[in-house]
Length: 162
Image 1: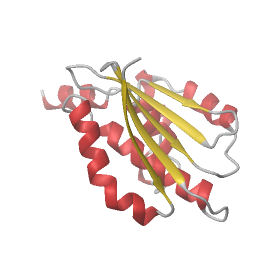
Image 2: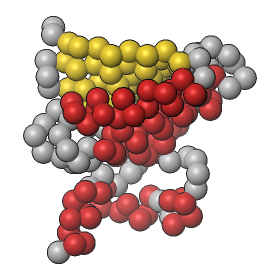
Image 3: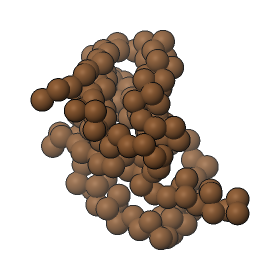
Image 4: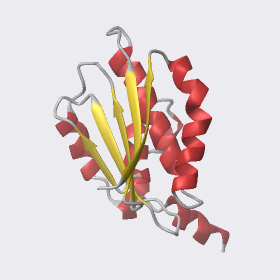
């Protein structure tokens, strides 16, 4: 199996900040233009790892970007923390209906500083997976020649312009 891997380990958020632009550029170059939402999702995953996994627990966050056969980008973020209730979070995400975005998030939810990370990850990635403990997330994005997100933000923005 041919794959290329770029990996980082961060002891603090400042370490991530130092390579954040490189990570964003790597993702944008790997994927087609218009896939910047996945960059936001990766930032959210790393932010969550520091906020919930490292804070008070010590340790470091690992970020791996893997390209398999030139067809998929797999982003893996892992922290040493106790994790979170994966089943509960996935149930909420799986109840999401694309046709009713406004039913899922109220205006006040959209303006909140937190609690949107998993939703953004779900929209940006073609697949999202967690380990049983809830301290590792995998974001999978197909490498295509066309841009897009799984929640239809790009499509909705284009139709609003016409």
